[in-house]
Image 1: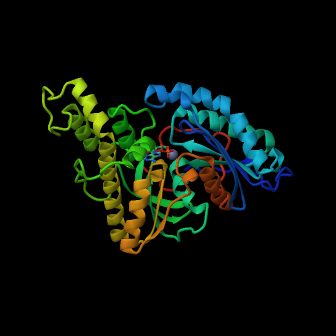
Image 2: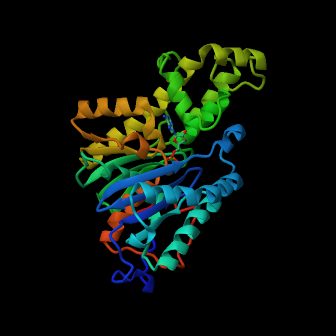
Image 3: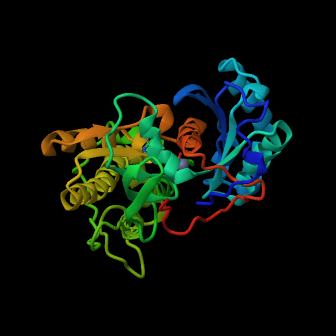
Amino acid sequence: MPQIFNDNNNLSSPLRGTGGILAIESSCDETSAAICRDGKILSNIIAGQKVHEQYGGVVPELASRAHIQNIIPVVDAALQIANCKLEMLDAIAFTQSPGLIGSLLVGSQFAKSLALSLNKPLIAVHHMQAHVLANLIDDPKPSFPFLCLTVSGGHTQIVLCESPTKMKVIGETIDDAAGEAFDKTAKLLGLPYPGGPLIDKYANDGDPNRFQFPEPQIPGLDFSFSGLKTSILYFLQNAGMSHIYKEKFLATEAEKEKFIKENINDLCASVQQRIVSILLNKLKKASVETGIKDICIAGGVSANSSLRKSFETMGHQYKWNTFIPAFQYCTDNAAMIAITAYFKFLEQQFSDLSVSASARSGLTFEV
Ligand code: KG4
Ligand code: ZN
């Protein structure tokens, strides 16, 4: 993480106020702004983008355009709800990486312009660090060191957190992320993007033991989801008759559609159960290896009802202290950027105006 100091970090500036930190999140398809004062979230506004639904995934160019349209009203609303004025702010924070570069650029340029014009310190935040720290927004909070399973649309990581600003990725996916596994399965089932919440909904009425999908054998604390996706693809192409690849598939397109339609609830429940078991088996292993029993989940997939429930059950079984962010802090939101910025503010980790948004952050975000 860049930790560069310059003239812009003038905390004794006459403009230094008591309004707290304004944070902006724009890494993917949610434009969000939040205000955090003294470690408390006063507002958290999120504008989603429905435009992508018809395309089966986020269209980067459309996302950037929507961020440009949304950012001013979203920031205005966050300030208004927190009863805060721009000149009262102590710092401006933004998501620097990782994400879609066009989307990140809208938020980062906006934040930098505000910081420059108001002469406020600028705080660059790592999106995955922020997902983890969403667990420090509300009480009860985990004690350090804790483990966090961070599961989003682009990442699947087990993170060992020694302090809000010192954390290490100890396991991660070697291919697809857990959110991608949900979204790609949904696509194969003919469901719109984002498919995760829909699979969760259908699974609610389904039998999770009806269909068996394989659990990959990956060494250590790493994950893999691409084999599961392929297995589901072949299973559907054979209308449930086999997982085995055949040059000539057994089912016609009509048979496949009929099979999906008649079994959608059980298919969703079975796939969901396998994704959850892959995630939690590795988390259990991480707890055994590290001896840590304060354990959190975070990221968009932590909104999944089966993961939340199974995590709590496992926690009870192994005597863990379990923590899950409030629902609104699981999927992308600026409150998690704001709380991360608050901890960076306390350590005076400010950024130079030359800091640039970055689509990739490398495989890890050890800070
Ligand atoms: O953290 P997030 O909002 O954005 C990223 O940083 O990627 O995560 C988005 C991911 C998507 O893949 C979405 O399908 C998944 O979280 N997701 C869910 C649920 N809600 C969101 N997956 C399963 N069940 C849910 N209820
Ligand atoms: Zn995210």
